[in-house]
Length: 256
Image 1 (cartoon, rainbow, N blue to C red):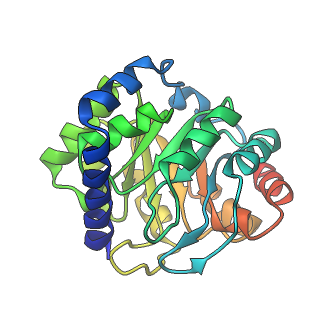
Image 2 (tube, rainbow, N blue to C red):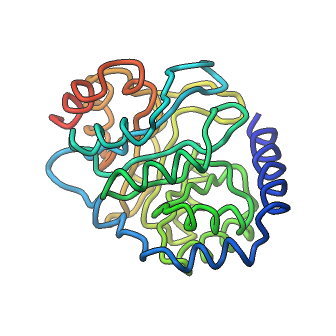
């Protein structure tokens, strides 16, 4: 499934590049104000931080929410105390778009993450041109040399990479990369099965000073408490926010 998602995202990026060549996107990216400092925004505190996600659908759950105005939802997230906004831009299975990201960027003053299956520099340029401050790099999807190249390119653009892992071996690869923001996704993107105990098993492998992000398997406050007790600095939450009252749910998580 992960290979299919990456291949589809790269195919869609190639189609967009036919309409908007790299040189044009480079100029758009260069014209943007500098990316916001996501590491500062997500720095550990005595309370959990939340990356709140704009998410319409997923391959594992199908349609989740009708979100005609992603910018309005993102503004709610910011007013509710989120530290950053994640915007799914994958269009085939998650029903997102770069237009969603651009709309969100105009509506909020906190860092914005492009949540996408990234495999080439053009996609990172697109993210910066649309106003993203962070991009997602999935260790399982990329050989280490490609991961290193894309990580370096992200930093060259002044952006932050959320380096996502799904196993002890992948955490080791992220640490070797020098990543300062490491996510541990409880959902295996190859099978879409959940391992709710994964974060707790691998958190100690992430060095002190690196921000630890727990992803997936957050349904209620007890899940946030479990992640916090296991060492999470940040939780990334989408489904639970878009399928419930977003402000009430978000603020209950921020109390942890």
